[in-house]
Image 1 (cartoon, one colour):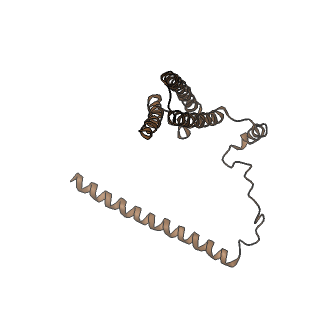
Image 2 (cartoon, one colour):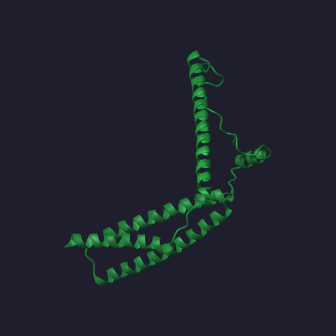
Image 3 (spheres, rainbow, N blue to C red):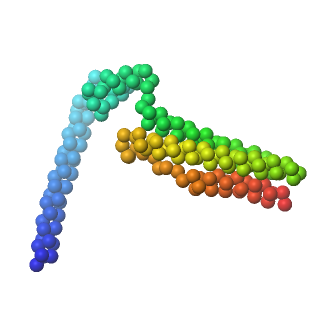
Length: 187
């Protein structure tokens, strides 16, 4: 018996929602029709500011009582800490991957020539140092992202943190692939 009343209740709610959806769509169509007719009559022609750029200097979403403070900060090139930290994270990430690409090119150039054992040992030491440095940079980047997420005013603006081991795996794999390709071209 309780199931039947639940089914009836669902049907009633569905009918109510159907009526609401029909009303909302007809309202939207009515508004669109009014806008179309006004455009045809030329009501939107020669409006004040037509053809001029829109002034976006004021943020309509900022609280009115904070508008002057935000304007002063903006005029003095002040950036909130979390925004500057986000820019630093982006720059550090770009720089990190550019350095990886540079090392890949260096590796490809190195293995395109024949070398004696001591030169290869020196390259291996350089590669190990490169991997160590990149791991340290990733650790710092991970801390910056954590700091950013703690400072960020809303979780929706937060960033996914990185897994240092996963990123290092990508770096090592990319370098080793270059070495493999260079060695396969020699034979």
